Length: 351
Image 1 (spheres, helix red, strand yellow):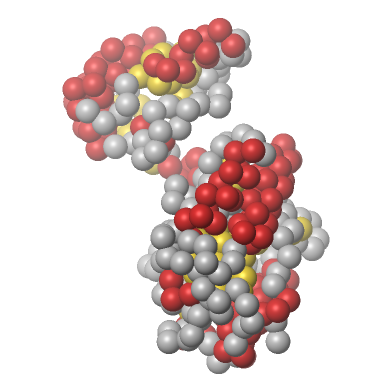
Image 2 (cartoon, helix red, strand yellow):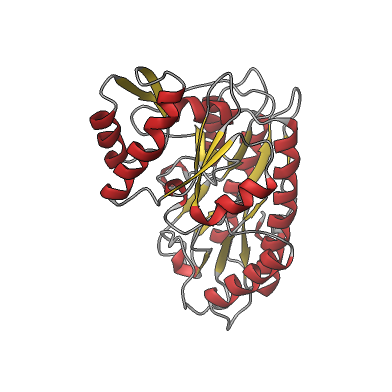
C-alpha cells in the first residue's frame, strides 16, 4: 500500500501484524483503510489505528485491537517482536498483556532490509533516474544572483513533474559559498555569488524507495584551493567505490577514502559524520560506512546491498567556500560495483 505520509509522523501512522502461518493483518491510518479493504484482496484483515501518540488512544488500540488479535491466535503469552514503537505503546502492552514479552523487532527488520530483492533494486533504479534529473535541474539553475531556495524550488518542480513523491530529506539541501564551510544542511535565502561552490543534495523518493545523490558545482572560475578540495573528494570517492565488492568490508571502503583524501593533506578536514549509509525504504538506514561513534560495526559487502557514499571535506576561510561533497548511489554485485547514479562530475573543479 502506498500510504499518505505526514511529516514527522511516518512511523506513527501505519503498521502490520505478521504471523508466520497466516496472512498479514494491516494496521492502518483511518484514511487508508477503505482503500485497503476494497483494493487489497491479499490482506487478510485491516484495522484502523490512531496516530500512535496520545496515550489514551494508544491504550485504546492495545485493548480494542491488539489484545483481540493476539487472543484469537493464542498469543497472549510468549514473545512479540516490535519495531519502531514508542514508550506509551510499550507501557500499554505491558499493562494489558503482562504475560507477553516484548523483544527487539527493529534489528530484525533492519537486517532484512540490508540486502535488497531484485525487484527492490529495479524500483531504486527508477528513483535514481528521477534523482539524477532533480540534481541536474538544480545544477543547471545554479548561477550568480539566485537564492539557494530558488534553486531548490526549481529542483522540486522537476521532482514532482517526473513522478517523485518527496526529496530524500524534508528540507532540500542547497548550500553555497560559506554555507558549506561548515555545512548548513538546508536551503536558505542566501544569494549565490560568483566564485561560490554550491552543493546540491535533494534526491528523490519513488514508489516508497529513495535515491540520495549529491553534486558540488562552481559559479564562475574556481580557485586552486577549491580545485584541490574537490579533487581530493573525487579521488577519495573513486578509491572507496573500488573497494565495494564482496570479500571487502565497510572498513576497507572507509579506509580507502580517508587514505586518498590524506594524500592531499585534508584528512583532518573530513566532515564529522559517517561517509556512507544504506538506503532503500529509508532515506538513511543501516548499514553504515565510516561510522566512528561507539558501537560501529564491521561487515562484509554482499550482492544487492545498496549504499549512498558521500565523502565531504570542508576547509574554513576559503573565498567562495571550501566545502565539497560528492554522493553516489552504489549497488553491490557479484563483481564490480554498479553505479546507479549518473550525474556528471564537475570537470572545472578537477586538477
